[in-house]
Length: 355
Image 1: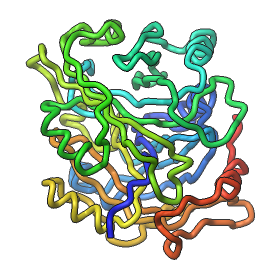
Image 2 (image 1 turned 180 degrees about the vertical axis):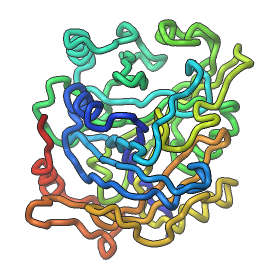
Image 3 (image 1 turned 90 degrees about the vertical axis):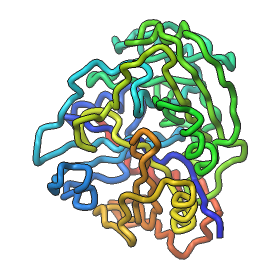
């Protein structure tokens, strides 16, 4: 039985202000579907939170245009700590979240007109596609890219969907490919180039020479939520010039300010666990059974990439469709390769949260 990687379920974002920043994410990225909201202790993560069980609140928000969601995460037992240095291109960890757009020019104009902190002009990637960078009010960096596919039509004025990938700083791309390419299935190398790129010039450290590799999965993903999560890409960045690259989360906890993990939706997680061990990336966290998230539940686990970046895996067992009437999807007895029908997932629109 082979593992099934259904797609990027969400990117975790540690914040000091869940309600304020979620309003910004709703207005600019259309992240208005509240899949769950839970306040609890994060006991399984004790090895990443200073040896002490910390409490937190977590909200999973999605956009029904398609793509992964944002898990907006805030400590309630301590203050959320920000990095004590300016994060630069080439530092190790999740540098930027990729969000997909249906009309990149319209999205760019929307962000500019609404006063967002847009950091670059519309530029072309080495593939020839347009993209731009924007910071949220917490100074987290997002790269808006041309979307590869879509789920259903919404009235999101920014014309964006959800998460379509991540930009990840690494110390050695060839070592990192053993995880992202060989284990996670991003086997298509769209480009592999080494130079200073004009698109990064307005970002901290962005004028330095880097190696930049864009990875995609060549085949559509299988699994219950694969159509909703859509096609995704991972871009690996390795600094060539800098000798002072730092871990973005050095001397901080998982859950602190910034992009805390990249989460993949999984079926047959035991098969994935075996592949990770054989590749040299053993699970460092594994709930081993259904972990109750209040309105949702599943088995979750973590590994670290070669530079310590946290990658989460979730095998979803239960998720709400219409919470008001108690309608949930239970996945344990379903064919793990088949997509859930679009009409069924479209009922998530009844969980839309309005400002």
